[in-house]
Image 1 (cartoon, rainbow, N blue to C red):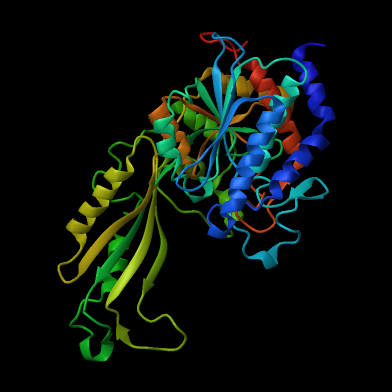
Image 2 (image 1 turned 135 degrees about the vertical axis):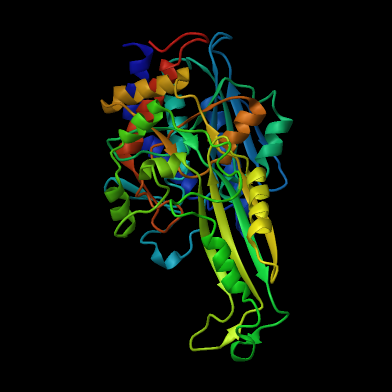
Length: 463
């Protein structure tokens, strides 16, 4: 039996052991956004580091940051001709509220049928353990066919505020040929996916001000311009009749979809009716000339996330409010720049807002979009691995959400990412009763074993 099949056999015989490893991680309440859990996040970092060390990963270090730790380790014995794969992950999780909606203890890891329930089971402790299980299966039966490095953070769920500077300060330590980032997911249990594009983000708070106090609408109505009405008009004007965003120059740098990309996205068979049924609406809506799947991953959007003004209690109170506020998010695609979009938003307000009110635009948060080469040798290696395990061709997909670390690694380290994962759309990530579909997860471990063996020496193609 060759080394690949030995590793596959080891993994198949040790799924229960890997599941125990995952349950140990789930038991740690590493909620990064809650200050009273800081010690738990640090403890989880130490456990992650210990797991790497016990496996034989070298140079394992736990780095302190202004907030939560970052764990590093490497194994670089495959030879200079073999690529270096930087494996990214995060060990922090979302809060568990509302706790009363959980059917199992959120930090216990409870197996029920084909699912493991617990916070972090899918996002992303389960994905990290899948990587570690694949590496263990290879190392216990032979040697790693490629060089590997690990970088695992404890701040992803709060926007990775320490990671950017860490990448800048440790460029040489993190030098690699490609990143393996398993923080995305599958389309369905029988539809594996490789994500090659992620949208960025520019998030704003817009405030409009009118009179210096709330006014009686009977006394001053028709004389004072209502800042709530102005804000509604401004927001309504941010899209035209075809669903296109009207901020000046907003589409100037948008990278268009290639014919190959549109063909790959159409392979997903996720039509408008699918999305309407998913969210309980009668029909979908969006930018004219694009399908829903194209709009979600490959076109930029502008959405109202929240509105606040005036009297919102029960009953009636007839006022003209003194101010109004809206939360606005834009999802951005390559090659858009969040800071330029901020400038475009300000220019829109300057052009459109009437002189009867005062306004402010605050940029709350940003994230750069990213896109990876779908013909990357490592992407081909993963595609071949999926086909070996699932017997079908993996779909190539652009994701609607944001994973800022991908763009940071492109910009700072100069390397592309292979994005995948073995979670499913109904895993309830960030929600009560988060779960992991174990048969899919087990196939994911086998897929990663094939992936590492499929990677060829530098300059070679996948066989």
